[in-house]
View: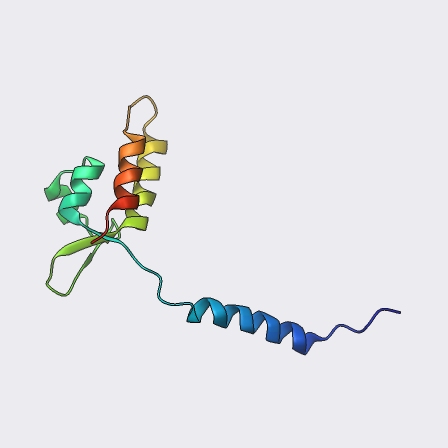
Length: 102
């Protein structure tokens, strides 16, 4: 006969795993100014300022526009997949996003 399934022990194990993930420390979020994002993504600054909310940007404490690098990476993926036939610099965008820390 097999041993009965201990639901309480299973739930405790799952909760312990989740608590360990949360208590591991804060996840470091890399942030890029919108001006830097424009240079990397070939956007005009005026367009980015008009569309900063749609782009996933935010205003930081000193009212400067910023965008998280993971959000910028998603935009890079969209640009590359939506522009067949146009050459986009794949490596420089990802290298700049992954290595830039503010």
